[in-house]
Image (cartoon, rainbow over all chains, first blue to last red):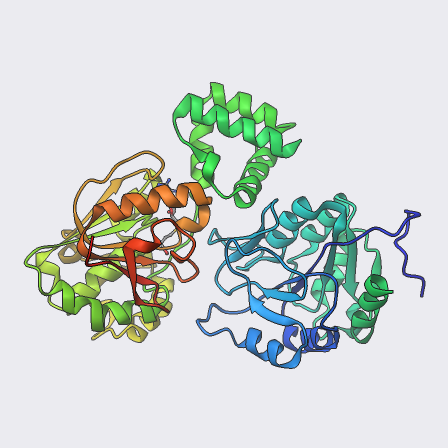
Length: 199
Length: 271
Ligand SMILES: C[S@@+](CC[C@H](N)C(=O)[O-])C[C@H]1O[C@@H](n2cnc3c(N)ncnc32)[C@H](O)[C@@H]1O
C-alpha cells in the first residue's frame, strides 16, 4: 500500500496524532497503542467516551501494556513526544495554539463530554497541516465534524474500516461526512502509523 | 488571521463593555465565538466585532455563550466527604462561618453545601455567598428549581459523600421540577460578582472555586487566586476543582496542602 499523502509531492512532517473512540474503545486502543514503539515520533492525544469516574482505569490499563507513557492530560501541560494523553472523564479536552492542554465543562457536544469534535477542532487550529486524526469504533456521531476540520486545515484523516469495528456507526458517519485519506482495518493501524512516520 | 480577529474582538469588548476576556483560555473561547458567528450568519469575526460594538443585546448573547456551563450536585463526592469528616471539625470552632462559592453557575454546589452543613449542625451559624457573573444562571439558582430526573444521580452522589438521609428530604417535587426548601435558601445569598474586575466583599472561612480557573490563562488565574487569598481569614480553606491545582501559581507559597486528592488547601499559619 503506498502511504505517501495524496495530492502533495513532498512528505509532510506531522507533529501530533489525535484519536477519537467510543463504544468498543478499550479493545480497539489495546490493538494499537501497545504495538507502538517507545520512540514513536508523535505525541498521541485520545478522547475516549466514558462515564465520569474518579479513578481512571483506562490510563493505568494502557500504560501497563505500552512502551509509550500513557497518562491523563492535565491543564497547561506541554504536549510531548513519547507520551499518550487521555482526556479525563467529565471534561472537554482542548489544545491551545501554544500546544498545551486546556479543559472545560461546557455542555455536552454530541451527547458527550469529553467530545471528540471539541478536541479535533481545537487541535486542527493548533497543528494545522501537521495533524493526523483517527476515528475508531463507536456508536454515535461524534468526531465527524472534527475530522472535517482536520481536512480543512490539510491534516491527514484516518478512519478505522467500519467492517473491522465493534461498533461501525462512528467510523461510518465519519466516512460519509468528509473526505478520508485512509480507511484501515484495525489490525493494520499500528503498522500503518509506524511505516508512515518512522520509515 | 482568525487569531488576530479574535484578539481584536476581545479588545473591542473590553473597550466598549469593560469585560476583559483577553485572559480567557483561547481554544474554548474561540469555539464559542465561531458557533455564535454561524448562528448569527455573520461572514467573519470582524463583522461580529462590529455588531457587538453597536448592539448591546448582541453582546449579552455573547456573554451568555461565554458562561453556558454545566454543574451538578455533590460533583466529586469524595471532596464533600472530606469536607464533612474533616474540614467541618475546624468550622465548628467558629461561632460564625462565611462560605463563598465562586463561579457558582446555577447553584447546585451551594445547595449541596447547605445540605451538608445542615446535617453537620453548622447551617444556622453560616452564611453562604454564591456568586457568578452570569445573571441568567443566578436567577435559576435563586429560584432553586431543578429537573427531577437529575435527582437519582444527585442522590447517589449525596450518599457517596456521606449524606445522612435522602436528598428528597430537602425539596418538594411538582411534576418534573423540584424546589429546594426555604430552610436551605435562607442561608444562601446569590449575587453577581465578576472575577475580571470585582473585589473582595467579606472575610471567608471557606472558599470554593471549582472548575472556574480552567477557563482562564495564567495571568487571570494569578489575579483571581490573589483575590481569593485576600478574602480568606487566617487559616482559611480554599477548594479547587478536580483538575486544578496551585502548583504553578504565584500563590503556592501562601497555602499548605490540606487534602491532596480533594484539592483542599489551607492558608499557612505564618502569614
Ligand atoms: C463550570 S462552572 C463551575 C460550576 C461549579 N463551581 C462546579 O464546579 O460544578 C464555571 C462558572 O464560572 C463562571 N465564570 C466564568 N468566568 C467568570 C468571571 N469572570 N466571574 C465570575 N464567574 C465566572 C461561569 O459563568 C460558570 O458559571
